[in-house]
Image (cartoon, rainbow, N blue to C red):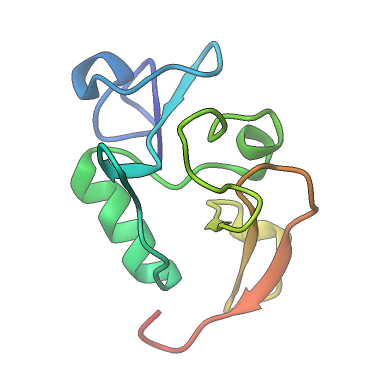
Length: 113
């Protein structure tokens, strides 16, 4: 999940959330507890979880810049959903490895996802 220094893009700011800032305008969270990485979820669930925490899904560009790195999760194995739906055909959303080293791939979602 990502959030911004200013509220327009995310429900709460980085300061309000207390999330670690990795980029000049963006902070992130990949753990739900001290030793627990956020679990694998459908696109819809991931989007809802981030919103419930006060954040949003990260963009492809933010992930490429390393916004999710350095938080202790095995990011080369975790696929992260992104907010960049315009990169894919209808009913598909881009997901990429959270370490940002591999280009995103479009994944199709079910009607509820």
